[in-house]
Each structure stands twice: as structure tokens, then as C-alpha cells.
Image 1 (cartoon, rainbow, N blue to C red):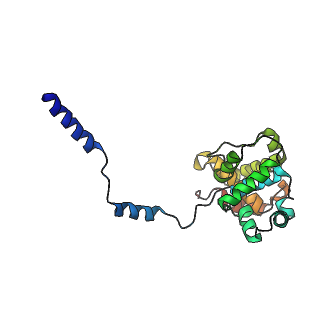
Image 2: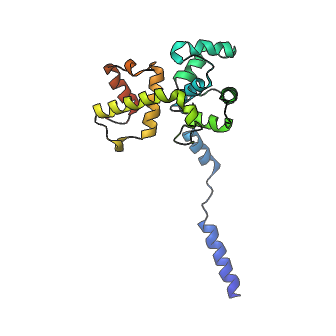
Image 3: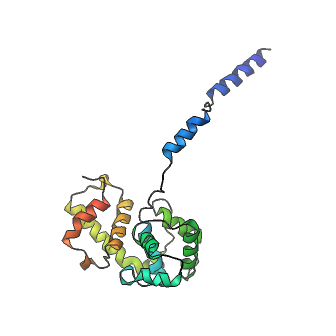
Amino acid sequence: MTEKVTESKQGQETAQDKPRRRPLAEYAEQYRDLAQERPPVALGFSARLNMLWDLSGVAPPLAEGRVISLLAINSHWRESELRSWLHKDVLPPREELSNMVRFLVSLLGEHQDERHWEAFLVYGPGVVSSPVDHLLYREDQGRREIATLIYAQVTDRYRIPPSAYDAEEAFQRCLTLMYRLNIYELGDFQPGHLEPFKNFMFPRVD
């Protein structure tokens, strides 16, 4: 009898320990509060997408008519949406992105995982490991080296300590702004670019 009473008490305690389910109306309100009208910008997406186009060798560089060339590859794409994908970190529709990645990865000449590439383009190296091996990085290495030099100039000029920012995020922002401003050589980077790069790379640093 004592054992049954003990088991009953334990059952009651276990039930009490479980979080109580709130009214559905409260969950509905919480859902509305957390919902976003637009998906968040995928920081660095355009830089990563342009890198993949660079590696595929299909289209000319961004500064040399890439957008117009891509219109010839898929007549259903619009110039405005291409520019948003390649310049503004706007994600294409899921089906469109998957088809684009499948096409580009097929041209790399290496065994690559399409889903890995797609996840990398969307979330970046801070979340997904880079699928780009040393061989594939070779063509983009020059631009990344320039980004590293710009990174160093900005942090030195404004005395920004490493503890004040996320290094990977800042580097992706640097690459993104380079693409937007058509900076492909170190000589393209002028003193007047310092402040815009500082504000874009380190938005939370005063």
C-alpha cells in the first residue's frame, strides 16, 4: 500500500514538473510577434554567389556585364532580380536557387555536393563549412587577398579592436561591399572608401 502511495506521489510530482501548455491564443500571439514580413537578409550571399559564378567560368566578371550575360542563359530571369541576387544579398526563390546551384556545380569539374553548396551560399562559413577546396579557391584568391588588406586598413585606421566584432561576419561584409563597388584590384580602393567600408563592415562599432 505504501509503495502505491509513493508511486502516486511521484507521478503527481512528475506531472507538476512538466511545463503547462498555454492557451492556443497565447501561442498565436507569440507567433505573430516573432513573424517577419520578409526573410532576413543573407549576409554575404551575393559575394558567395558571385564567387561560385566566378569559379564556374560561365559569365564575365560582375563589372564586365555579368548581369546581361546571365539573361542570355535563362530568359525567365529579370534584370532587376538578378541585380538583387548579385548585389543586395537577396535570396532567389528556393527552386530557382537549387537549379542555379545544380547548374554551376556541374561545371566545376570536381565532385561537389549540391546541397552543401546551397547551404553554404545561404548561411555562409559561420554556419556551414566551406565546400571550396584549395583548387577552387585559386581563382578567387586574389580578391580575398585584397579584402584582407582592406580589412587591415580599416581596422588600423579606426583602431577597432578584435573584441569589438565577429571576424568572419566582417570579412563577408568586406567582400560584399567590394562586389557592390566593383573593387577588383587594390588600386580600385581609394581613401574615400575607408569610411563607407568601416560603417558597412562594423555597423555596431561607434
